[in-house]
Length: 423
Image (cartoon, rainbow, N blue to C red; front, side, top):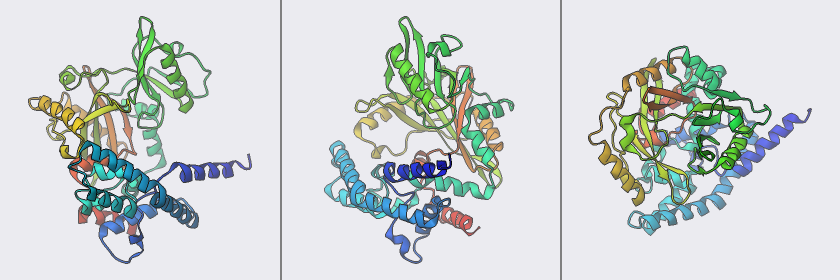
């Protein structure tokens, strides 16, 4: 027991050294030069802030090791691999000269190749620093919430799906019911025996995000079948049982009813998966507003990976109307074809059902967390009305920035971070 802190430190270092490919933010020799672009100073501060809990000497050593491994090994290999795949899909968009641009971004700034494609940086490399990239996002979220003096309890409530359900249900916010909660250390029982009734269900962990290990299951004449959140089919009872055992190892498990889509959304997809609506609220000048909202439409499995593909349709927060995806030229031809069909469908699409009560409920939910700058609320529009699945404090920033532009593209945005730094 006396060595438990050392074991935890050792495990943490192994995870950071061997499982990470990138430093904890954008890292570049340009940081050593005095002055410079305000965006450079903002990224430098985000990288430095990411290690606030580390002894600084150890932090710098770790970053140096990660940087050298990325620049010498992982970065060149992953960049070349990605570029070859993109060039095979669309050779006209990725001429040989684009590889040099890609390497300048991936090795010069530690920006992963996928982000270069997400933000179309090979065509616009001068805008690379406009964006907050995924590996510096935790530091950005923490920095934006810092002036609000949030408490650990608020973040823990958001991460605990049971606590969040209880806290918001008393406010009249429609929460997805929890049919059963099974502690991680409870005796192992077969999947079917763990359910209150043989009905279609959605199983997920009590904490965590990105749907890791989650799956849907439904009764059939032969037993059970289901589908993993990532898209793989669970074709029989044994496959469902295997997914159930794997989920039980992760955390406490929550069993919820499988939600169905509102009839008005039927034309968007031929899949039986629930269409998720993400509504991101934020605090700004003491008021709550919508930062971004998008409909995430499942479009079937990817033929290469088997994972579920999604079509993303931005939503006008003032009217609740669906809008076309704004960056079709960045997508491979197969994805553009899927989006073309989606865009044809929404041309005469009415306003999303129950949009006003959904937006109002999201704002009331955000009001319960005055110390967190922005929260992503995941909803499903059902025949009975909108049902809130969960709230996310560590939500991804790629889609909002693809739609609205980089968060550091304006002088106001970089000055905001600098003012937080000065505090």
